[in-house]
Image (cartoon, rainbow, N blue to C red; front, top):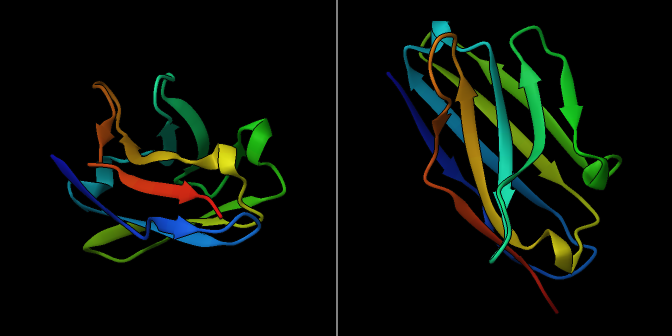
Length: 118
């Protein structure tokens, strides 16, 4: 089992920045990638960014150049960060951290609200 705890959401003005964090604990040796999805009201959940255990990252086109995903780890946990700059109102959504392990569906965090508004 993997447990995910997210933090860092909130209200920010357009053009501002936020950093989301997600700490994974439990069976972290089985994780081969972690990432962030988001879901706006009335919309489907969509991929924002992911990072593999080897450190490779991928981004959705709508965040390239504005968001950066990084990770750090120790024996007890893996922490993934999503640095979000130049935020736009259309970035408003609930952001969900996830962890991919072989042979089963992704683990998901509880979600953190990001609101971009003046």
